[in-house]
Image (tube, rainbow, N blue to C red):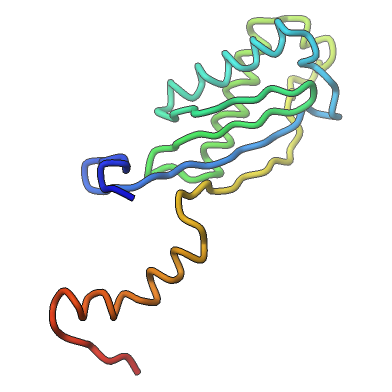
Length: 148
């Protein structure tokens, strides 16, 4: 992995890519129609852009959504999920009044969700890297600090 493959921020370097998934309330198939699926996708993309979230991939299914996104380093997974769900719901209701017929209370998405980080390293590779730091530094600096 090359250093130029990472995102460079003011005082940090790295990637903060996550997989988000959430469902419509009661698993209603609100996005069976292509126009509704496109509206959902556009609403998520617009919401993400407003909050400096870079959407890498979106898949809108009839009753749920998958999003792969790079979030700012200061943003938590939970905050990103709240922004994406809340903002997209607001826009969908605003742009298609018929959604209010199915959801008169104004809650398009169910309370639950799925969040996971998407790494460029496997967990085993990261563990091995950290476990072998002593050996790596010993080679480059010519010393070996001992840990108890």
